[in-house]
Length: 64
Image (cartoon, rainbow, N blue to C red):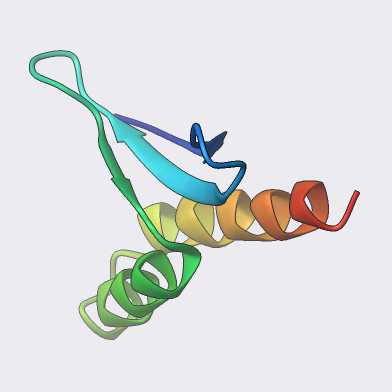
């Protein structure tokens, strides 16, 4: 799975989750942040960190 910032057609930065099979899933940074928090609670630190990095980059890109 690939987690990365993504700018939608309306110019809003979101977080995109791409999988080897199927269509990618995009969500708001707030939704992604909530998922990262839940992942930390169950010990999935690496994936939570990937999501947090994507959120930081999306936030930075949106401010440019």
